[in-house]
Length: 219
Ligand SMILES: N[C@@H](CCC(=O)N[C@@H](CS)C(=O)NCC(=O)O)C(=O)O
Image (cartoon, rainbow, N blue to C red):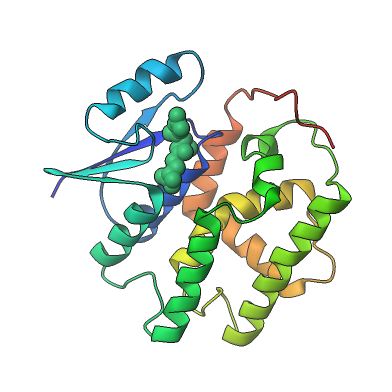
């Protein structure tokens, strides 16, 4: 089997990170082709992706004659390819994990739009606004409750796609509000997640890249 994963610029491509993590965590060998999604070369590069993948976006996984696009589809494919699926065996737990995945995939909350993934690598980071803190608390309550119910170390006990899907969100939150006061289980889970070797590898490469600070990065 020869798999090729098209990903994006490390510090900007949070969707690609999710797909990459799922393949890595499942121990699946793949060739990675990083697509530069910075302007202006972005348009030419994504036009090349459009020749074989209708959304003209990354990530895309090519498995022989099969083109699998969209991070969620790739994550589920990786889960099924691996020796142990990255979704809970119990039907209700699996539905809850999928609910979280769907929530992330459909935008999650205002926090991701306001605090870009790239902003977590800015040398000067602003404080969260009151509204962002409120949204962050809402997420932390969800994580805290899941961890209390499962007993950890991951949201559903064993590592699942739900944990991996939250990595870019956790990176945004922890880089803007590291203490997470009042959410001890969520705090430790965030640290555990960001310490996974796969996550460290991606983030180290992301940190080494120059950042583009957006004008709208202000409270
Ligand atoms: N729903 C898609 C979103 C993919 C996406 O927006 N990818 C960005 C890079 S992280 C991209 O390639 N954008 C190109 C564009 O939208 O023009 C997924 O989950 O894979």
